[in-house]
Image 1 (cartoon, helix red, strand yellow):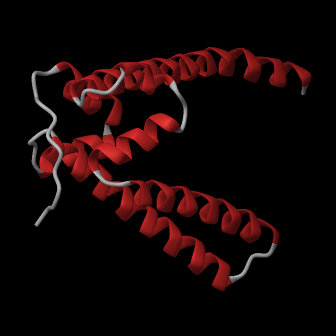
Image 2: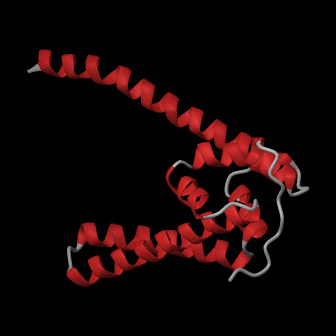
Length: 154
């Protein structure tokens, strides 16, 4: 039994190291991308390094403060209902949790859409931002696309 555990550990450690390395690379790419995006919007690039505040600034650039706070509330509610559901499995709690998750997903899609419209891109770019945010944010930051504040969308 101990041999099997040791063997499993020896196999899983390299995968864990690779996984952590990929996460760190993605985080660095997103910071670089947001730094460049903030500079395009005439804001200090170092805002990209400040946790939570960088997302707040991004929301203010492409949407508004209210939707940042709404997103935070959705995250908190989702976490609470998920934890409650673990303790008290109940259909009502499950439905509420799923509803909050769906609203959060729609909110995220709208944020991605607003980011792409702020750089004069269309729906295809929104899909890219949704599924590969590190890559598509980096493209936005490094390409010559100009940021423009989109006041109202149709």
